[in-house]
Structure formats: C-alpha cells, structure tokens
Image (cartoon, rainbow, N blue to C red; front, side):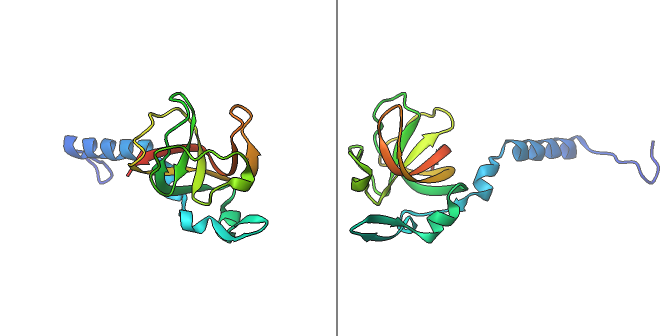
Length: 155
C-alpha cells in the first residue's frame, strides 16, 4: 500500500530503531534519577554527642542516591555487602560501635552479588540511602549510613 499514510522503513532505519529501543530498555534508570552525594556532604558537624547528619542526607534518606569512592576489602568473598570509603584502604574499617563510626565510610548492601573490585579502583555506587544506628543481624556489623538495594560500576 502506497497511500499518503503509508510508512516504508529501510532495513537500516528499522535496525537503528531496534538498537535504540534495546539500549533504552537495558539502560539502568536508577542512575538517571539518583541524586549525587559526596563524602563531604554526609555530616553537618561533629560534637561530643557524635556526628550529626547533614540536611542533604536527612532530605535524601529513603531515596536513591549515587556516591563515588573505593571498596574496602570485604570480610569474605561471598558477602553481599561491602564498605565504601572516601580514600583507598588496605584493611576494612570495621567499627566496634556506632560511637566509633568514621565520617568517611558508608556500608553498601548489594541488590545482587557482584564481583568485588580492587580497593584502589574508583567506583560509583547507586542505592537507597538509609541512616541511623543499625546492627546487621547476620554479621553484627554496626553502621550509621547504608545504601540498600545497591549496585556499583567501576568509573
């Protein structure tokens, strides 16, 4: 049919359209909508009572964020979590209590197992921000800030 409303696609146009649609369907929409967060923006102040979360962290709690840092060496290879640090570390900075919580780490709970990366390689993590003292029931690890349902990519 070759009327005024007929549409003829060349093979090249059709394949280009299919490729564009495939890229759109496989893109991770989480990265597009995730708010950027940096280690410098995590806390507003430090007092005798401890670290105080920044207004940005308070506003973004429960929302998807992305943050860049370094993966501290994991406790065990099969873990579904790791510690994201501001600077590369040779040892994992596990803390005995939330009172000792450093201001430059975030615990990351992966939404699925991923192969861990070298501790000197920059990664970008995207996940749902969670704050406040919490003890992991499986490991006993105490944290103040966490990213849940997270995933990461090397930068």
